[in-house]
Image 1 (cartoon, helix red, strand yellow):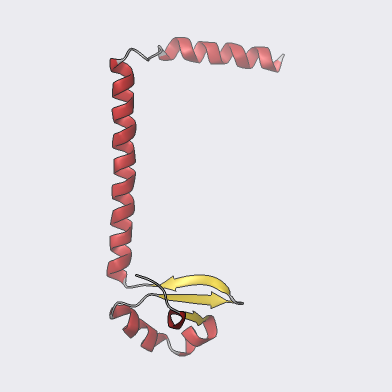
Image 2 (tube, one colour):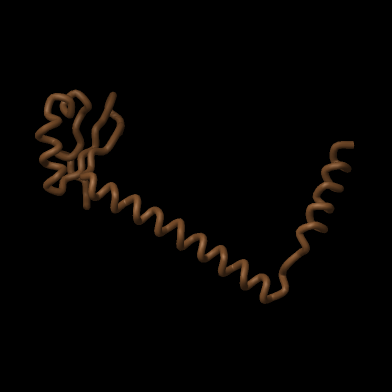
Length: 99
């Protein structure tokens, strides 16, 4: 949904017209509140905010699935290292760097 100039309001206007703004937002508008001429906060419908949060959780889950798939593909291709030997190598490197 594009934001128009009428959707950008100052903080003082928002304070004075909060009830009216809330009604507009419930009807589908989104408002950008500015402070000192710069974007400060947004006013959006609570259901839309919940939807945005669900989308973000889904995105995170998809990223985790993609990482797991890549990891399984690496295992299938034999691109793995033993954790104990890798940790021991890292410790040896740290010890040499610290000296």
